[in-house]
Length: 241
Image (cartoon, rainbow, N blue to C red; front, side):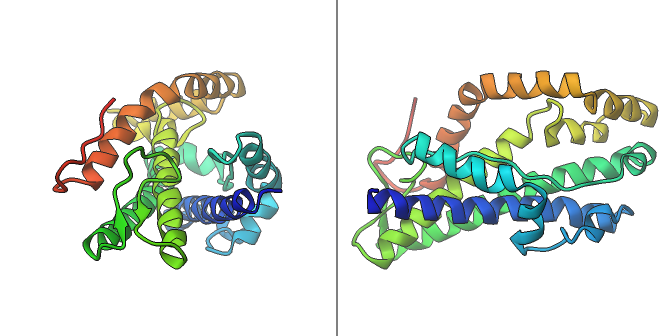
């Protein structure tokens, strides 16, 4: 096995586990604080990845590793979940909506942390913008060793968490964006009906198929905009379509 590919896989897997753990812990924490202790009793109000992996070993371990090597190190996919009380959500649809938003918000915070790290690297001339950026090369180190590892780690953290944030915010069941829609519905009974609709397994499957089909097209302009925001103020670097 190529040692470079194996090292890249370890970076991706570490970032994936951190990102999904933070995402689900955020769901669990907000639900707990708003009255549903289901995930709290399951040990998921925690940054310890073990309770999250124990709940979804296929989605958090098997599929990410397989997807990485099948795609020759280009990216990694998988899933995780946090339990909640459906009757609590039906009684408090707007509280459930805040719970839904908590996961993508956690991923957005990791995008911001990675962006700050990259900007510090640029300011200290440890990093430079890549000529041809991709998910693993959002930034590049001016040297090797620890700097190169840090550039790779920040690049993967930026890219993966942007994907997780945007994908989960799509307003399609069973994604978090669908769960957040009660916040903008004018009446509570409409919010309850929407939650009931979005929890239907058939509609959830259709939603996942639609999300997977169109996400690449939808995500590309978001990614370009994020790169341009990251490198704003740096002359000669503007990424386009």
